[in-house]
Length: 154
Image 1 (cartoon, rainbow, N blue to C red):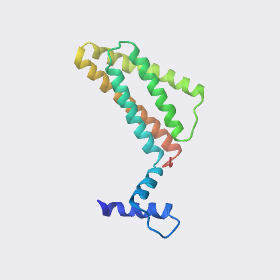
Image 2: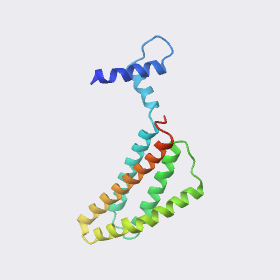
Image 3: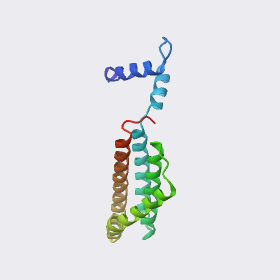
Image 4: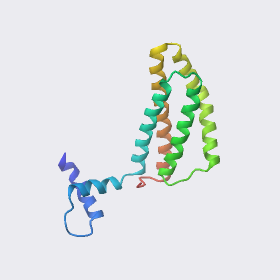
């Protein structure tokens, strides 16, 4: 494994080291973290939101689940845009929220309310649906920004 990482280590050293001294492993790891891509940061954020959405959906709140998930998804899209250096306007955020709420009426409401019919197992199904929907939305948004800014460093 170390042999596979050697070219990356060498590249990091060349990019960030101005002197001929060899940096420590801690310095290399710290510098490598700073050159993370926007895609990597966005993926990590999407996973966090998917976990939060799954947890929210499992709560036995009949109608508020859809509104809460829409708010989370809108917030996620906003922050992915910020990671890529864009600042969505208030109108962009409102339009996104409106579109997500309309989409949730079709997908989430039917699936989640059907899952509520089966008390304990249904809650797990609700969580899986919510987490999967957030992951899918995040993937689409990341793909959009990657087409605009391919491989952009964060």
